[in-house]
Image (tube, rainbow, N blue to C red; front, side):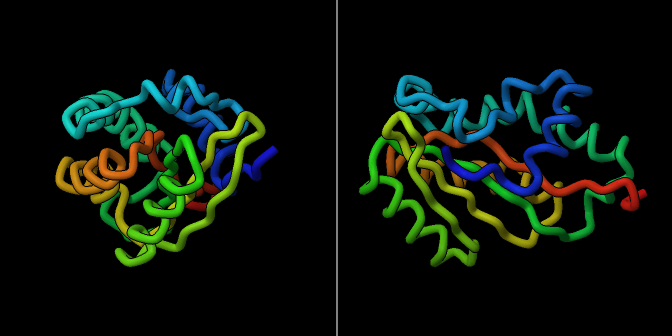
Length: 154
């Protein structure tokens, strides 16, 4: 079983409150079928995030997060094979992301790419298009992003 990002538990609670649980799955919840049929075009990725990102941003505001303050943001991608995972991971590292990768028990692969940015930047159409283009290039699925939220962030 692959590791769970440090923000997954906190984000899962936020997701439950915001009705986003399906968009915030843990690595082990993914299957190769999910990865192969997820968002094969830039437009589909952008359209999907246009629905989920405003809800996530609203929940972060409700939790006391300043959407314009830079913080560590974790982006999660899934790949069907190791070659695609490695290609995407290499390019993400070149773009300044801290990258961790691994294999799921079903033979698919995950990528956690972390970078300092504001939540508004993470949710911006410009940024999503850039990440979506990378996903299309390497046949990856973009699951979304999250950030750590603590009770003391208010």
